[in-house]
Amino acid sequence: SASISGSSNVAAGGNRRLQQTQHQVDEVVDIMRVNVDKVLERDQKLSELDDRADALQAGASQFETSAAKLKRKYWWKNCKV
Image (tube, rainbow, N blue to C red):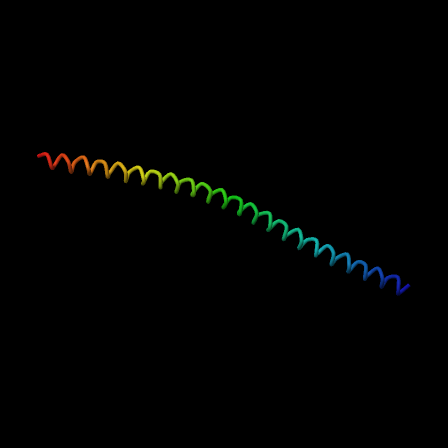
């Protein structure tokens, strides 16, 4: 009789440990899901930032070209005066 109740206590203890381990695994899975969501969100923001940087670079190049043309135009205009 003692060995039967002893083995059921061992089984209950093992089951409790299994439940605790499963709970910890579930917590880690939840944390990792949040981390993956954050990484995906970060990737999206970086992609948007890269697009904005490209547009800014293109605008700066266009401005530089226009400024050079304008400078030449007024340089010649001043030479004629």
